[in-house]
Image (cartoon, rainbow, N blue to C red; front, side, top):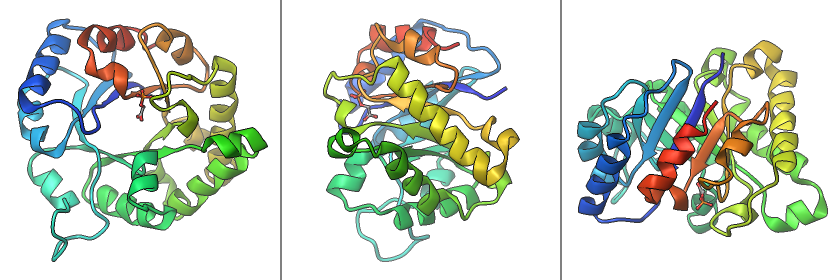
Length: 252
Ligand code: PGA
């Protein structure tokens, strides 16, 4: 059975102390996860070790929000997969639309990051999703398919199975405008069919595809109930303990 996942993406928010408090408040809810459920906290680099120290319960994990696409060397300010691994981090978000837009990350660059993460034994949370203009033109399926093809399709089936995909329509991120359950289910099913075409249905059925874009305490359960929506990648609402607790409770 594929995993159902509530992943928090704090982005560049909160001080260290606020981050500690937020984790304490969420973990104090003591939500016991089923075997097929996971909670992942995507925190800023300087907070990873602190978060690793707190997040110990079964199926709760800590994630970085990015890594560099080179192994090591003269890349001032960048963080390598090896560095993340050496402090015990096991997950890493890559290809968030904000990184694609503000830092020029291409599908090719992301394929390199994927290889380094998988080579280091980390689980990539690979983000994809279309901008508003593409959604309005009705070509979102082709757009997202190309993102998968160019970043993922060089992987073996065994490696592909290690990845978590997050579909995040850019027009829904931080806008309060959530995709409807029908829109989310439709494109998630399409993405799974793209994976099935290349890797077979059995492989495609094992991959968790999370929805991201204005997931809230009030809509999480309904979104997560869609057959091909396996949880969420949550920005704004993951910064409020009570909201994120509700979102975790919304997992199937
Ligand atoms: P949001 O962000 O929940 O604030 O829309 C989601 C994301 O960008 O991961």
